[in-house]
Image 1 (cartoon, rainbow, N blue to C red):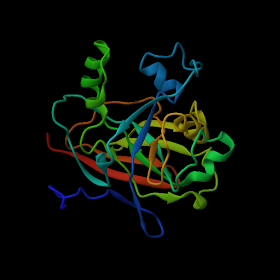
Image 2: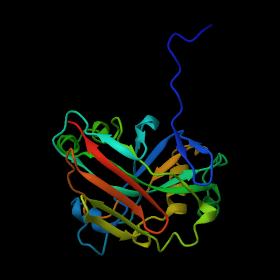
Image 3: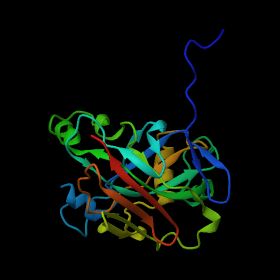
Length: 235
């Protein structure tokens, strides 16, 4: 029997050196830098946070958008940026919990992206102890760079993640400041989901999140590895 509506196309991200990465799911990590946890009021100090378990949320696969124009979303007056390392999985992980020591083998590539957030909607939902999907999972909420194969990156741990808006630096931190590193996050995700080829993981943001307005230009960087250039348009 024929489909009653056209099948949606698969979102694909260019990979440096050739080819494309078809997106299956997008997982996001919350509060993965201590300074950002303090900034959001969930850590007592900039040097200590209860490690506990990581916080996860999702975005739809078609929230991905490449370099260039990013539409300002509806229903918000406070669109905020969160620059993040993005991890791309290149194979289906085995059933069961993925050991930390083995998790890195499933990483195909890395990129840099923005977890765009309708902060006013998030704050309103948090105040009522309601889910805040509408604050995170909206159209065009996951701008991302091209992906760089992991084998082309020598030293990810000491890489610097940064974001400038209109030429002014707003966020900057070393990836070694993450509370949970990439293998640890994949291990924790595997307790909850079957990790598959095509999955993306946005690894959390450092301090310095702030509002963006139509007309703003931005450059997100995994310094020395890859950049994402774009601008916010319309309202």
